[in-house]
Image (spheres, rainbow, N blue to C red):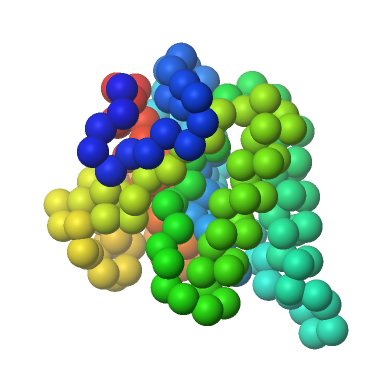
Length: 171
């Protein structure tokens, strides 16, 4: 069941996802992630994808793929990757967002894993009741919901993304 704000990114995304492992990704140079199943979070955190001095900007995509492979190795029952829908901000941010989306989609295709997106306003509304909530409100809501402090907003965003998807799917 796909509701308002959810966008199927591949044929059948969401179908049969109940009781299946889901990876939620909040894309960014510091990339938030959360892995869960049946409304239970198995792990969450952040990945630093930032290129180091002297590295090509493309290194961040190699780092993302390495992290995706790590998740698949740890959770071979992974069935879906859901990520925040890219916003077109212009310039380097748009280029990076499009690259991450492309990389996730191609990685999923290589491994026979479904993928889908949720708009950030949908996730914010799920977390706080307001689709335009600011980062501090999301972090405070995450503390209340998940019972622990997040090191930054990226992990909180990924947890909310996972939670919003699972609730949307009736898990």
